[in-house]
Image (tube, rainbow, N blue to C red; front, top):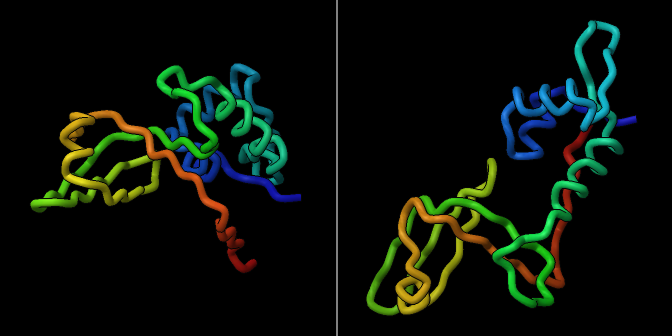
Length: 131
């Protein structure tokens, strides 16, 4: 059975280790102590918790067939005469979008503003690290 330590769970959920500890202490997230007395979270329980958190409605979302919505903060914008690159920090992940300069201007995007990367893809590769 796969288990995760608090720091690993925090990284996967995009929150601090203290937040994960509070969730465990309040009973929102199941954890047990391993042989060394460290708290560990069963992978299946962590996955269920992540699904539950992700299923919260996105009040800023309109109707769309895209299901992958990643909310983050704009960390960089590079523009030329026609195109722009927008960097969005989503938890521990950097998401980069290429769009027209006009779209950046119309959306009012600037460094420090909130944004949601909406991804619709029929080809997503899932890798698993070697053990």
